[in-house]
Length: 542
Image (cartoon, rainbow, N blue to C red):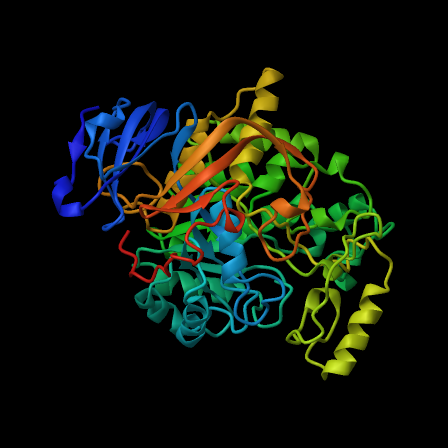
């Protein structure tokens, strides 16, 4: 690989130069290479201006250069987490732009893409998108892209949202848990596909759907809430798991594929795939030429139902975390030829701790803001649109329910910024047992390069290459540490990953040539004291 220069150094002003004996670079053919590297960055343009595939010494550069040798730590492209719920405006006691993007930056994530639901209003109209953009101003520690939502009756908003700069669209085939984002029917999906069929976008689906009664678990499906009637202790994880069987996912995937003929060029995508039974269905569809991919999540790769304690609702998410055998098969898929799973994301979906209904021995002391905005949380049956006193009484009644009830607790796992250590640690453990696992190069491909491509940002994000945004993560793969509450930079310090020991930690994060996070630094490591992230609103072209 030859050295290359985008702009003369003199036109860029003083350079920032990061070097290491190990960096993962993107070559002209989009393949990835682990190599020594000297990466020169312009803090003025925010771009990578040159890369040399060796470690050049400090005296190779003018005295005004900021030079840092990070050897033997890894220089990686900043991660692109293409599935994050930031919940602002409207549900800012759950999460917000400031806290969610701080957590991302601390984990080497330089771009997040915000989901269209859980904020009020949702991003299902251009006006809703504008409200979200206004709320994000001056708050983001990393760059933030946005998805639009597909709900019944908003097909006329989809093309205007494309023009406004959303990175893709998401719809639910099952109750989303929030009233302002209802599930779509086959008619709604068909209309969305035909509307978007000639646009460079991605149409994504939460692929769970209650099958016909003849294909389900029995007649109890007729009166189930939610969504199959539980048969067992509500604090038992197995009871919850049985209520959302793999058939929910396979039926939804088959429904989507049955309509794909309406938009043969449109990129279809299954979010947070959990059930391995979907894999052969997707593989056959891809062999027939259907343009469909899938993602999975850190929690499906790091947790298994076999080891989830009853009552530990920190693990509740939908689709659910499944068996160890299921997890093993997901890992096998990651290294398969032409894998259906192209990306790995966090699906960071937080809430306030009281909505998790944790048993007393798992609950941390929380400071409740009595002045927080009222809201509705339909999953758990609380009407938070009531007047304040009535809302407080409803919340009190809600939190006095049996703790550890998987059916009443909010579903979602908090993990934005933890992806690198989760994947690196779990892969190392599996490798030690003789399993074939993704390398650090593969992890970069699935968490940076492919996620950037999924949202139409591969021209600027997800790669260490001349001309790209200088989004760089410094990762120490030898650093062993245990996640404690103070390490969680998101708003509510509640996560099933607490107490886990990881190998590998992000030590620095650079966003467009600016050092935004340094582990152990002042201000909890956040450089400069104020956010420099931007809202990504450029119209998607690929």
